[in-house]
Length: 78
Image (cartoon, rainbow, N blue to C red; front, side, top):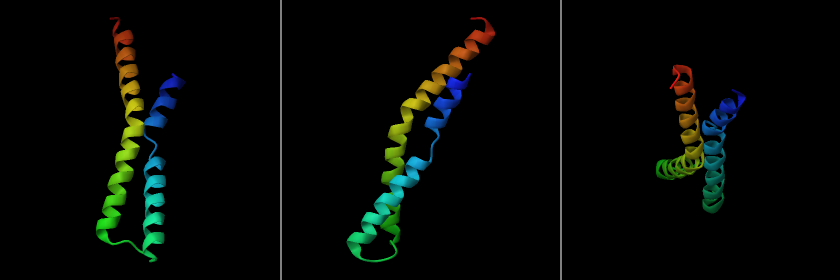
């Protein structure tokens, strides 16, 4: 049962998104020499960070879903 918790944790870690976003934000601000990003820069940093986080967490989501299906079949006696 604890294995499911670990898989769910890795699947839903939003820290990956925030680390990626803050990293890109720092890089953009350092490059421009300013203290704030405009809308398009912020949007792109969020989109890239979300894409990377999604790619990394997708395998864990698939594993979790397969484990839930297997558990459901065991409980139903199939």
